[in-house]
Length: 341
Picture 1: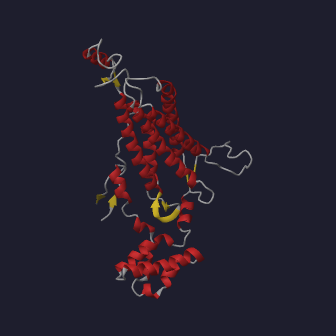
Picture 2: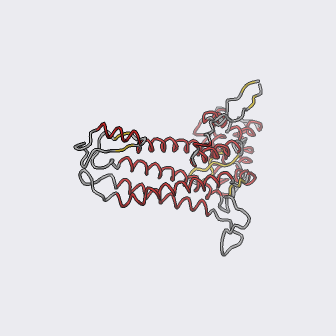
Picture 3: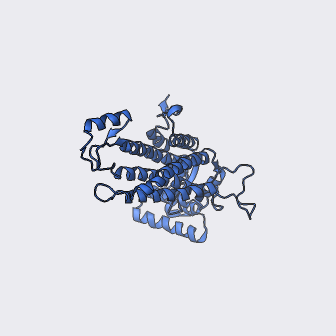
C-alpha cells in the first residue's frame, strides 16, 4: 500500500494578533518540514551518536518554542491585576467594590489580597519566563554556532553581500549574530535574578524594587523582542549544507551504526554481552586505528555465519533508524497522518 502526505494543517496565527514569538514558531515549523528528511548526524556529548534528520532537530525546537509561548501567555495573565486597597492593603478608605469597578474599566482583575503594592512574585515570574524564552533562543543560537565551525560546516548564518566576517582575516564568516543572541540571553537571566530579589520587601512595602524595575522591565521586553526578530531572520535564511551533513555522517566509517549492528546480532541469536564485546572490539579498532567499521563487520565470519551480507546492508542503512520521524511530525501537528490508497 502506498501513502501520501498532505500539506501541513497546523494553525497559522491571524496577522492582526501575530507576535514575534508566533512568527519564530511558524518559521521554525516551516524549516522543520523542509528538512524533515535531510540526513545528519546526531551528537551526544559533542560526539557522533546515531543518524537523525535536520528537520527533526528543528521540530524539537518548534515544540519547545510552543511551550514557551504558553508560559508567556500565562505570565501575562498573572500580571493582569491591579489594586486600590490603600496604604497597607486594608481598603480602609476605598471599598473593594470600587477597586473592582476601576480594575474592570482598565481590563484588569483586582488582586485578591495586596499590601501597598502588587506582590512582586508576579513580576519575578514574568521576568523568569522572559529569561526562559531567552534560554531557548540561546539554545538554538549555540547549535548554529557549533554547526558553523570550520570542522563541521553543516549550517551557516545568512551572510549577505558586503558582510564582513573578520576585520583582519577576509576568509572568515563568523556566526556573530548567534553569538550576540547568546550574550543577550545572559542579560535576560540577570534581569530575572533581579526580579527574584525584588520579591522580598520590608513589611507592607519598601522601594528597593522600584529603581531596578524602571530598568529591567522595559529593557527585558526590548531585548527579547530584538532577539526573537533576529533569530527568526537567522532560521528563515539559514544556509544548510546537506552534502556536508552527509559527509560528516560517513566520517566514522559506519561506527554510528554500532548499536544497530549489536541488536542485529542479538536478533540472530547471539548472547547480548557476546554481541556487545564483538561489536565493541571492531568499533574500538576503527576509532583508534581508522579502520572501516562496516568492512570489519562484513569480514568477521563469526558475524556473517549468523547474519547475511544483505542483512548487514540493512543494518547500515540510516533510513532504517528513521522510520518513525514522520510520526513525530504528526504528533506535533506539523504533518497530517498518511492516508492509505
